[in-house]
Image (cartoon, rainbow, N blue to C red; front, side, top):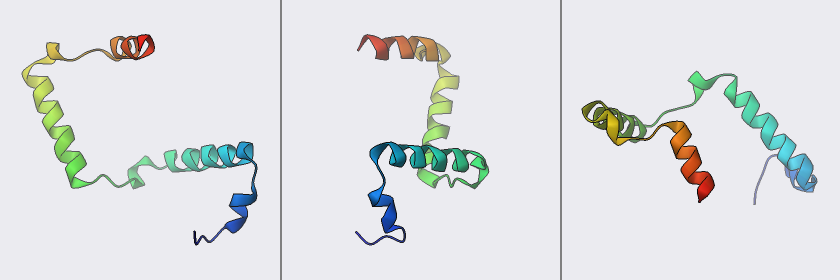
Length: 71
């Protein structure tokens, strides 16, 4: 693996996880800079149209979380 920062691979697991968290936090500061691909826009438009056509077909976030927790 060719990388610009080979010392990253020498970090402990805990340090690597913290680095990942810090990177995600820095990305989240500017969400408008995250590219959205055309296929993602198309999928979102399709799902929105389906929801508008039949809003009762979906689940609330709370209901979805509960289903996931019950496994």
